[in-house]
Length: 96
Image (cartoon, rainbow, N blue to C red; front, side):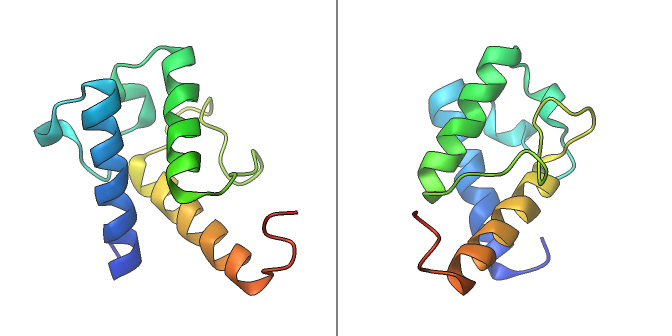
């Protein structure tokens, strides 16, 4: 993880995977692809929604499409961090 925020985001994502999707905590690594989580397509979308809800944001599909092959948890963390920074820079439009 490149920053303290990335580590915090990754730990939060891991907690969601463990508590809501019964993923074994020891199997979760930053380079793990979303496709390796053992979730079907509906479960994958539910996971993304749970992450968005946890961080109070929406990830635009142009930033991260969970159906795209090879998306890793690290890339998900980076997309969340970028969206947090974007929302912080434009607080008037963040929740419009």
